[in-house]
Length: 227
Image 1 (cartoon, helix red, strand yellow):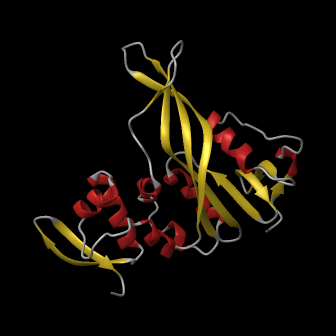
Image 2 (cartoon, rainbow, N blue to C red; image 1 turned 30 degrees about the vertical axis):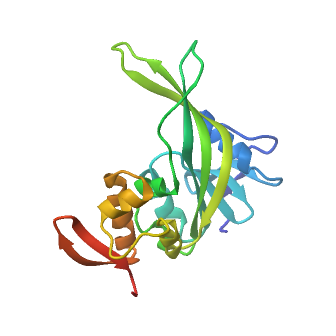
Image 3 (cartoon, one colour; image 1 turned 45 degrees about the vertical axis):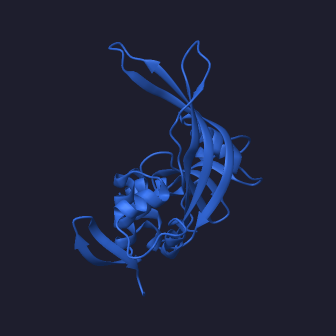
């Protein structure tokens, strides 16, 4: 790692917050290990966790927001992006008991964020760590009756999964998906929306992991590359 760390911005006796969400703070607490440094300035950016020569970035939203930081730092630093996916979500409102949302997440939701940087894992200095979690979302009613999400909180981490290279993305496809497949086939097999299935296909195609075999009224059909 090049010597650009500004120790004056490092929290040494605890985990800093820097106006982060409760979910971000909860994940940082889950990840923290002895010797970690937090909120460290590096080349004009703030790094969530520095662990030896590894930079750890917790990204609870769009990967696109990391574009400038990755462009500046990836050439000289190892970076791990940690991204949570809510398998189950509880909705909480002031004065009411939390209720469980009918929506469920899965590893394939990762592609909804990857679509903004589809070849992200192609860089040898970058890895992804996905946390499958249960979260609580605090919502309040706005002035016009609309419901606004005010905060997200970590309930529990169910599972962690590390992706080190683009080939790891193929393992996220559902078992038993017959080739050739369309995004409609993928949506049915995985129990996801057609839109998310299209994001999956796009990211795999951009990484040359699948090959388009033809088109029909059902859409484009794909097989894994090399078959």
